[in-house]
Image (cartoon, rainbow, N blue to C red; front, side, top):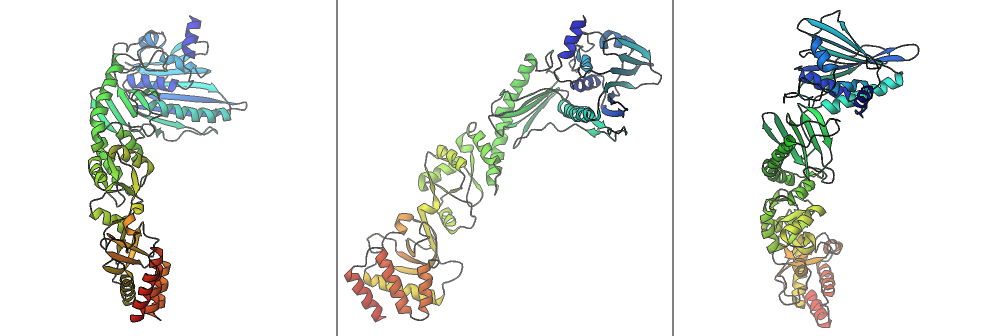
Length: 520
């Protein structure tokens, strides 16, 4: 029998698991408040640590102590689903930390008891000299100051780990190593929440489930709890891509406390989880994905959520961020890509080219490699950078100056004399593929033109009708300065340079340019 008792003690691989067992007993006893308190009493040689768990539950009589607390494999909770502990062995965990003495003080029906449990597993039942409400368990252990510091830290971690969702108010307090009394207890309970972009919840009598998309599908989280006490937290992929917590009175831990029983209660809970994921979670996903796509900035949450959604939702229900701001769903993106191509650009809410493309119904996605990979799958199109495929030229914020207007007209007249087919010449701000060119051709000011057309030659048939001088280009800015002294010379230099760049400055064209310049 002694070997069996020792085996029971050493089954608790975590020597601090006794906090879980004692708090579990306190909750089963009906206590709404549980205090965990650590004290240190220094001595010349070392010191004594007292770890105390106190509750205000129903307490125990001598009969209960002898029949259930001190008798292994017997529990008064065996057929009660509202109780967590049903094996009758959890109390043995107090010996896993090798204490010098364990004291249990309890009172019920006018009977107040003090039970002394010794390291050799012998015990004494005495009358308690003071009335006791509920139960108070004190674990006494000799240790140094350094060991006490470690004991406090590990005790705190253990209580938070096992009791963070406890339905009872659990507090933790520890006195200083100089022997001073502990201060007010710190609550350890926290909401039943997940580290996910969002979560959904299901409730019924005796069961609460929360679930959300995993931040990393290679490392999911699953938590199981009974009355808020931790039964198991694991990275086992029980619901791939989903983090979840299930709090249910139908869940039980194994005899060794290191796993959850995979029984009917477990199967029922997992079935409820599946319905939650396929229903409320996917419905919420559509709403959350749109909201994330519409945000101006993204910390990585959006594309992780998009990646998760792309494997679960119809492509029409996916949402993608636009470079101008806002978002577009998969259906509209497919229509745009079919007509204009799958365009993307860095976010620029006032970019002239993006505004011009939007005016023609083209949707330009915000640049993000992961997002674009999924967009390519949805649209079955290859991505194209909007600013490489299009050019837009517009007069700019204000009207052209007199100098600009005169120079543009003079250049246009000279090129027309040399054989250019454009109808209008203007000074403009250039954005897109032709940004580095001294001049571009566009079909209309302020409207996007395909990049190949915008850099084509005005001396060829079918060219765009509007020639735009790029006021930001060094050659044009130099010509504007020269115009103050000689507008004719400035116009001739620009016209000759442009004609040469278009390979149109043969002897005949050069002669025409010279004649036209002399006649101005």
